Length: 335
Ligand code: SAM
Ligand code: DTB
Ligand code: SF4
Image 1 (tube, rainbow, N blue to C red):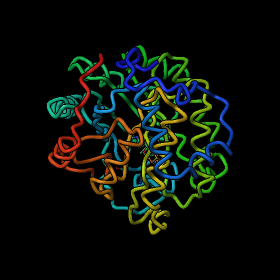
Image 2: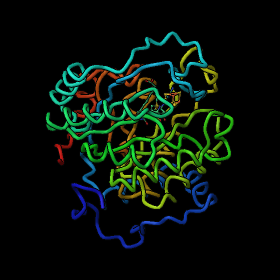
Image 3: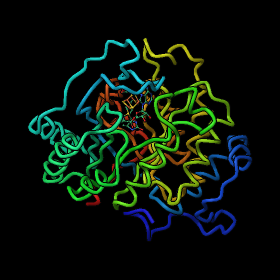
Image 4: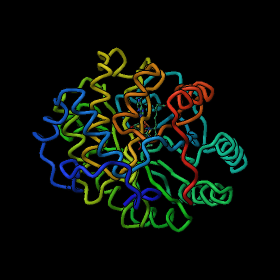
């Protein structure tokens, strides 16, 4: 069960809508859900959402790029890959004081989760030690910590868990069939192995993917099935809309229709009823109405603050205005 609302139910008790936690989803089932008439799909997703969460509350998470650019991986979507010429402002690992200042600002802005991202294929032993120190410092500020540092060994995952790292983000990003078209420098199985190391170390898992990379509905279904059939559902499932960055191979990809994105959120909610589904990258390209439909579809977490890792995110004032218009409150810290 997921943290704060595990024991509370917000729906009427329509038994037909009670969905079991399943790990045996078939591709055809996910495809059928994605193809459901939009109103029926949103009704189903919202009904399930209400059984597990307060429908008028979202969680705010903030991101900080603690090490930017120069990454040896060749992820076709990513502005931080050394293989793509994107003009990103690269920098080495930030110092503790700079990270602490960013964490304090995030907390002052209402965020409960502080996620530190590093453009690494995998950290070295020294880098894990350095990040462990950052984690301890941010925890002392009273924030939930999350990190995304690339692949981890069991020992590295244990060291981060011992430092008090609460969540580890490691996305599957796309379906296994499409993975080789998007990334050639690691395999799907590499990702699965790191997720297992994170779980075994006792950390919570944040794992999702990117849509709008030119995939078909079957591709999106394939990603959702992989996520929902992990041994445990990730506690957080970020659904990113591709942010097209000039210089990356995916720049110029045909834009995904927004309703397909909203459908993906709804199906993630249905297949992983107890997970926080995060409306992640790509909100700059979404109007308030589209974001409201994402919340109706079951998204209950967003990244707050005007920057993601290297690209823009909506201004805090705009997010505050949107949430106020919708009567959505932000969740208070659970740790
Ligand atoms: N290097 C680590 C890794 O790949 O796991 C951590 C940082 S990486 C930037 C974290 C995630 O950001 C990726 O898994 C991907 O889902 C997301 N991401 C990167 N570039 C993106 C883009 N242009 N649009 C949407 N999401 C993106
Ligand atoms: C996730 O799924 N999305 C975030 C976070 N986890 C690390 C990252 C989005 C990055 C978007 C591109 C950029 O700003 O560089
Ligand atoms: Fe490196 Fe992560 Fe970007 Fe891939 S997504 S290039 S691993 S920073």
